[in-house]
Image 1 (tube, rainbow, N blue to C red):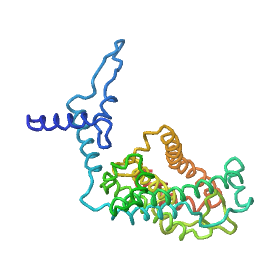
Image 2 (cartoon, helix red, strand yellow; image 1 turned 180 degrees about the vertical axis):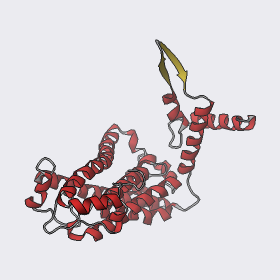
Image 3 (cartoon, rainbow, N blue to C red; image 1 turned 180 degrees about the horizontal axis):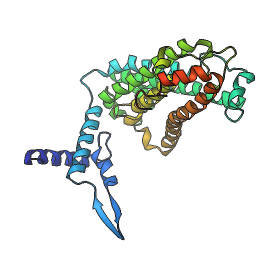
Image 4 (cartoon, one colour; image 1 turned 90 degrees about the horizontal axis):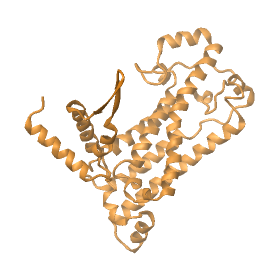
Length: 314
């Protein structure tokens, strides 16, 4: 049961959130429209408001958590600059193939429909584009932060060029959510690099079975069977948080007000969202080929390491 004081507090929180609809830190006013609807009971359609006391409490707690993640920390934005370049370096590590494209004989095990020379080149070009974009993003947000910290005629030009609303520059801050996203990107990169080292020349972006390949089950491959995909997924989630969350260049600059920018960013985010799905699909293709190529070793490995991507979950 909720006492009167708590109820008043929640009512106050709800009013504040609703009064700021359209702001970066508004959450309840975003979730509330989806919490009303209808359900069928027998032959009758029963309208209901999902914001019952229980649901309202859950939404309130979720809103409070999101609000805390979006609250700027009492840290100078200048400290964000090296972290921005650290994030770009993480993505660079994730999207840099450690070995050249394998020859046709080494990819035939997966069939032409899975692998093709066009797809090989396209994937690598997308990876190169992703690296360039993240370095550009890091340089742009860093330039804005430094321009705001050290006013001059040059800094004024920088702000007017990179910010659609230069008066919002003070909103570019470090938030707990942004730090979490940065940690995910760094963790993903470290996992990927550990996989590069463990597999050595056997690690290719393209689905292939190298000549004289053996089944590697040590290092990160003793925890889950496809750890490199775990790393990529973590880095992708971190990218979402660090580029569209509160306190970021895209969220605060005003460029999202332009339809063209929204469309381009939607395409980029759609591709980023596609990556985890593709990783899941590839785990099944790889497991099938490895099981056929190394039947006894793979079965023993699968018993010791039953999870594909996330220990104890998947």
